[in-house]
Length: 155
Image (cartoon, rainbow, N blue to C red; front, side, top):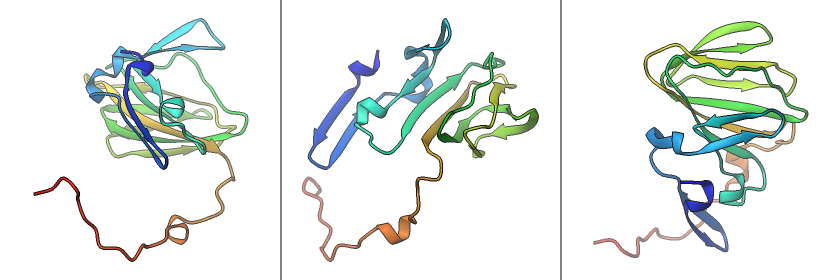
């Protein structure tokens, strides 16, 4: 299954996609543009969801595997959300443990890499957006609508 094969529904104010089970992320392969490396288990969803404010990727690093290079960004910070497995994250030479529930923010200039150190795949989501671009607060941006909630297809 490629990103193009995902089930996608679009409307005026929403896009809904089903990428399938996270346990099957290895069916997606990403070709690194700057190196002759294919990364199995990586899916970017910016184009799938028509995102305008960030990039999100779903990632699966096999058990006992490591990303074989460092990377950093020109303008974007990254937030890593670890949802399965156990590993180690390295930023600017400092190594710290990561497990399910660990959340990591890395500034654009942070040189980063990570590895899985358990017998289980390391599964995580990365959200990438322009550093220092968000000036609001989620609570202040939300507007409550005075309308009774109803579900059209419910019993």
